[in-house]
Length: 335
Length: 271
Image (cartoon, rainbow over all chains, first blue to last red; front, top):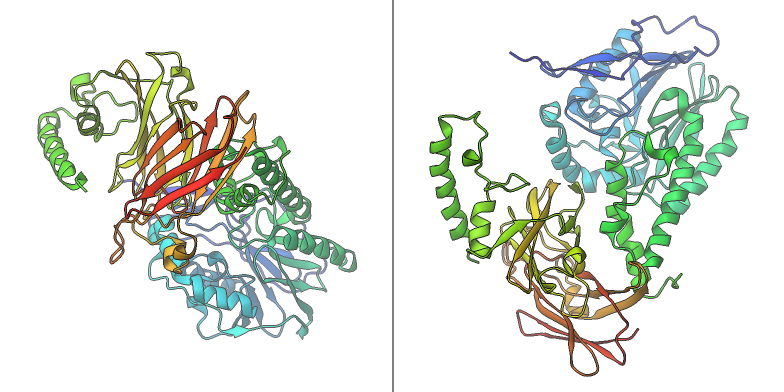
């Protein structure tokens, strides 16, 4: 009998440990591979502490696949002393349930609030496990989850197979607005930016400097773009960068990519968006067909990123027809 | 559509072949090759060959370049690029290019007669499932040259209505044409890109009969055709077609065609 064991670049092999009584930021260590158990549908989620009271559960820096359980997102939680705040719930009901148990192994504090940072499936498909807790997102994100949840589910079941068992898209229930709030000893701030999707929520923990940057920042991974607006996204990256000096010892957690590389991710995401939009505009002016653009070489600096070239090809299929149409209608002069 | 009967026929043939080959599944001799020597290893190929090429001489050839995405992210708009320029000086040059997709419910995608254009064509089409996509290229001496590529797909592209059908907007733009020339995309050639607004209904969506552009040709001022195209149901909504003309035609060009309901397409194309 074959037992499928896939070695993943998941969380560090740090055993569960008390979340209290530590001072200062915990050094971010390189991640150790952790075995996920495909036969038992066990994601082997291992929370890793990155600052006082702040933990992340890291996904594979890859594209969705059955081999990685479609666990490619970084989720997290903050143990505030007055309850736990959870950030993102992963790609499936099973993930949400296992995330909940993993958090319970770290702290006895109850979870008081769950945040979905945007409308994409891996940010909220674990919400089923959090039915008794306020699950919040920006209003636009909730509307998007309601509108697109079934389509996501069709796609995720196809891509991820059994990992999706009994998952039903369950949008966040409570709209949340940008605000500052004090929870226990933690000064938290919810910030709304935009561009990766129509509504991108960020969570800043001012005491520790941890910024959950959601989908605005991708590190060493090709950004996903089904709801993106390049110009707004670039402006939001500027806004995010402008915030950082006011956050001492800022640690930026991207939703996709190595947690320790979050700050570089701002520059990486910006460089990618600029290259991509420039390349598409130039190709359309020259009269290239989508089939030719798909063959175009990718600059060396992006070649080693995860999800290359599948994610690039998805973006080209989504975006290039718009550029082609503008060129065809004479809205772009010949070069 | 006749493909259903054909499909049954080749399923029966495959079934019979399977019994013969089943006793020795690991043998990889040519006799056991159910794909008839197809470089893409598709068991549909022997049936397709019989259906489309009959007993005419054919060869698989890298002179027929077929480029598509490894994975069709948008199964309603799968971009394909066909380039048979290496055959321009073979067998009197290219007479026609037939594009088929083995595993589509409607396999015929289009037929292209390059005439005075280069044997190069880009277009988009709908895929119902992952499939080989092939260009069957006939040179004027009657010889067929076959190239192809595999396109993986989640599929479903043939059985959902296009955007303009779903929102009803197709009727306001039916058969409108946008066209534009681009210079030197391929060295020394004029590229013509044409978009025709048309819902291109496959007939495979409940309650929506097949409705698609059937013919299209480019005529010069002397009414000489530069290329001719026969389209079939799988060509994508609002077809976007890319042609290569080796020289700039002089005077006013006309794009003429009609759909299967008899609606005319007629537009001037200026360089």
